[in-house]
Amino acid sequence: MAYCFISDLHLQEDRPEITEAFVSFVRNTAVHAERLYVLGDFFETWIGDDDKNNLTSLVKETLAELSKSTEIYAMHGNRDFLLGSQFANEAGLVLLEDPRKEEMFGRSVLLMHGDLLCTDDTDYLSFRKTTREISWQESFLKQSIKKRKEIASELRTTSKEATSEKKENIMDVSEEEVLKIMSDNSVDLLIHGHTHRPNIHPLTINNKPSQRFVLGDWDNHGWYIWMDPSSCELKKFPIL
Image 1 (cartoon, helix red, strand yellow):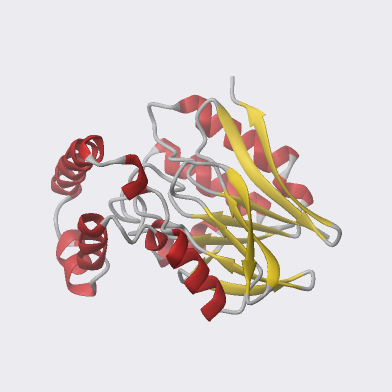
Image 2 (cartoon, rainbow, N blue to C red):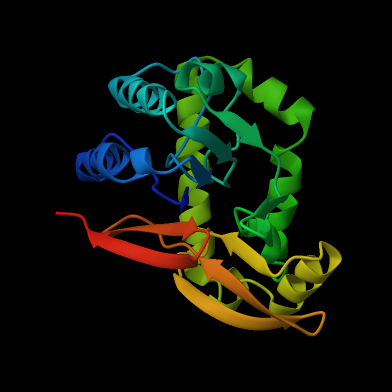
């Protein structure tokens, strides 16, 4: 029995090598896990479940096949927060709230995308709050697919410009927030992505040895966490 975790693949049509790596990963690695957790930013952008293209069709087919042997869970990221029930049903996965507490192999685990931990990035958190509102999402999804793509492109450009002007520490997690949310949820293991800074951080929570696992983004390497009854490891593999 084992659980597998991935995050920040940022799948997009102009990076076919990442999609190929994902399909190969599912068929050769994830298929051996009892559960696969996708912790956000699965796609580089998502403008609605009604936007059909070759990429989304391939991903749904790959996940649907995997779901025959492996339970699949996914969490929204800052790029794909509009993933909806139609995609989930067609892909054979269950959407999770962020954060999500689980009991895994005798450990209390908190799963997050990770953006909520970046409390120093107040501009982003304000934007996140707005775009998570039902009224904003309903208004956006009423637009034509063409218009939604235009808006998404504008938002990505604005985001890149804003990111280039921010200090590195602002875009990383707040250690204080990490300690608080782990303590509040009484967990000794936190798993998240978002920051693109893969690492394993030892911590002490409520006088107990604890850990924060950070998943990396898929670029030159693919990253995943493999957890079983005896171990929890952060692993990577080359993407050619």
